[in-house]
Image 1 (tube, one colour):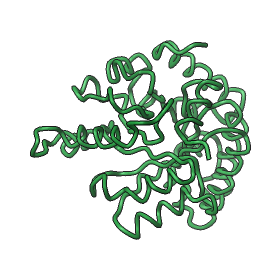
Image 2 (cartoon, one colour):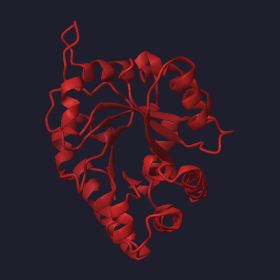
Image 3 (cartoon, helix red, strand yellow):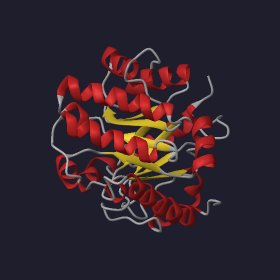
Length: 279
């Protein structure tokens, strides 16, 4: 199977460098005039798929907002994943899983095995039980053409206490994570399948991303305060690998599908300008 990195490279070339989240939190359902229940969740998700599934390179459902409705919410998530894939979008499931041994292997099977009803193109994971503990994720992704995005420098203020702590060799914890993912991608062309999550609000961190050779997911744009122009400060020479990610900035335009498309087109234009990407 073609690698996730190759498929992502092709999708961005066709549709542009943009990831849009599906984050159906209670306030957003209310804003759309929907009930905070499974029916509202299904209507919300279906509208986003209809509006953006055939035009955005990557769509990122946030699993927690589906899980809170139990098995019926997960059924909506499974359906949303299928619809997005049928529309040609790559699906990045935001689950931020992290564990050890057979448990992380089970998580890998849940999301990266094509036989699973929750099978997606890529997932987000947490490395704070050690990057090595995520080996089953990396291995199953490699076997089935999947991708893994590892948290590195996140936008939340609490993250710095862990991510910028120093290891015995003087690197920050985040830099150690960055360097290990770079090693996994070292022979990849045109793009590695193992990415990092680096918040667009973190500013000039002094961290070296130049050897990663994989996608750099940049959340925090729009409602969280960062603009597309901030990407230059955060990523510098690594801009060609950046995948900007918006949620509320686009979703607030709903429930009208045309308005959602217009909002996505607007932020994509901003991102192309910031990244120096062709129209």
